[in-house]
Length: 291
Image 1 (cartoon, one colour):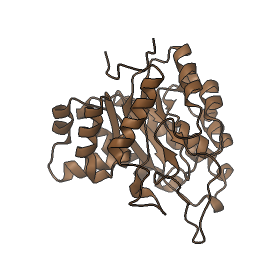
Image 2: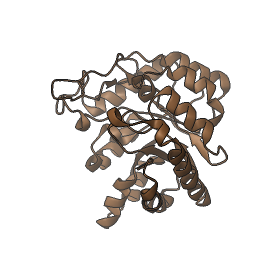
Image 3: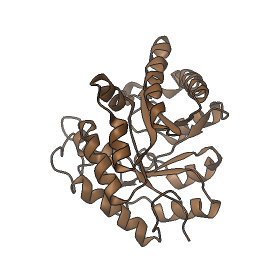
Image 4: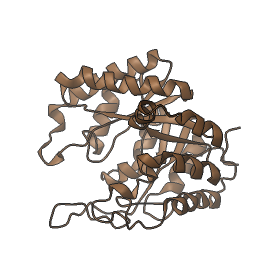
């Protein structure tokens, strides 16, 4: 019997649609979700209780996604302090994981080797502060950021202090970055404490005459599970065989970020998350709730 339990991240909806996201994700039967640090900050600034929304729908805020500038050492302290402000807001939700990624940058003029030591130092410092709060820090490589390619992922994972920095691979992001996600998961399995399960349409990123990413799906080239080219079945089977006991969230990037198909997604968000769940059910997953 398959034992993995799945939540679904809220990124499929716009940030301002977090209430709808929580409602739809819970109604679909997923057990938890993830949102951004700045979403919590926005609700706090308006004296609104996002925690009450989660409690009403009996959904767990499994993880909090925070990004920061990883390559600029003079800004390190301010960037870490901002993330820790978001982490403090997350504490009331009693979730276990903080997922950390880098901010977007111009990779055409970027050399990872010039910044590797700063990236590793920033992650180590931040992860130790997150650990002091009793939470787990999971690093998340992401296309278009300072850590995208296989070489970059390897150098970071082999350079960070694994006592504090865990790994949150996104199989769709890794595939889009040109790397086999199954190989990365197998080689760095012992570091994984959060998994983003995402499908990708496949092929290299193409751009139009204006330099914008040509988006074939309206979800930045990503698709609901089972509609892309990522070998999800073998990845999940590997995790099942290993008895993976940690967190897993289905993810599909939202149409609001599409540079060429905004307003024209492959399908509406509620249909998309149902489609992913149906794919997992076909693989033998039945109970999506934590027991």
